[in-house]
Length: 313
Ligand SMILES: NC(=O)c1ccc[n+]([C@@H]2O[C@H](COP(=O)([O-])OP(=O)(O)OC[C@H]3O[C@@H](n4cnc5c(N)ncnc54)[C@H](OP(=O)(O)O)[C@@H]3O)[C@@H](O)[C@H]2O)c1
Image 1 (cartoon, rainbow, N blue to C red):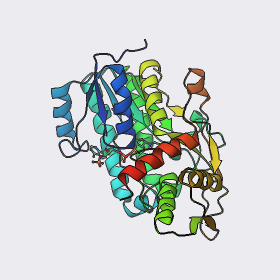
Image 2: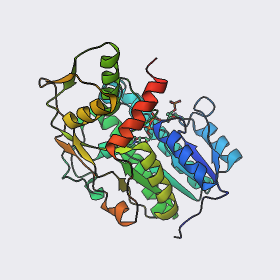
Image 3: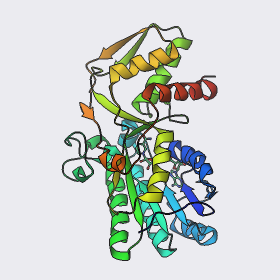
Image 4: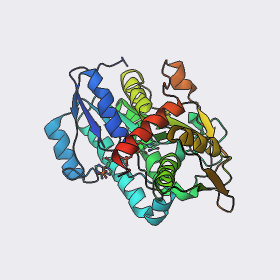
């Protein structure tokens, strides 16, 4: 299959209002394509008929599937049925209807958190389904794995160009900064800004601070998604990482430096650490010529600027 051009084409960003969707729409502006979006209020993508009618009417050439029900451990454990049902419905509706409406190419998003809990590091694409899942997000993971497999099944049986990507942990402007439902990086940003505001000298962090995590700035992901839409044509999913690993303790130090927080961190060792290391192997996409550009400090700086403007009132 040939590389594609997005210029003058109709590109539907499903989930345009989320962390990834917003950044992707911004990135797509450079491609001179016609960006199509649709709010959940107007078309809930779990609704087959509404999704079908919208696609029939708008006829996109390409679709990025960034719509999903996303959340942290607490949300996953409180709403398992919603996580599995919403993500399965969005995937089955959009992927099957993309086939029905002869969409030229779609890109579906998985997530590195759906690889087996004890995958060999750095995690290669072929580690998927080689071991047990992290129990705290198995509902989400099962639905997302089904989404990846749907893309592959339609590619194999119907020769559709349906591709999928596995991004590592993301962060950036517009993230979920809620301490309970958000991820570790935005949660720390929130805690540190609160400490600055209320002149607190110490911040408590769950676990030992030793686990290592990889983070990718969302604008780098958006760039990778456009790159893959243009150039990647295989039915097997492909990892998108930054190759930048950091311990939770060092992450807290970087955010402190950026925000000028001079206080201390207490590591609550009675709380779980989770997996000691989580890094994905991005050799495939790197060898195709794509690499992330934003350093962790720069990305955190941009994220904190956004937080200050939008969240700290
Ligand atoms: N965030 C990460 O660290 C991360 C890491 C790896 C992979 N990913 C993947 O990237 C994708 C996007 O994640 P994100 O962080 O951008 O999530 P997000 O910020 O929660 O955005 C998800 C978007 O999907 C929309 N949506 C949810 N349910 C919908 C429905 N039934 N119908 C129509 N729209 C619906 C949401 O609309 P409402 O806001 O109106 O509900 C929102 O705009 C997901 O597939 C996720 O698995 C994310």
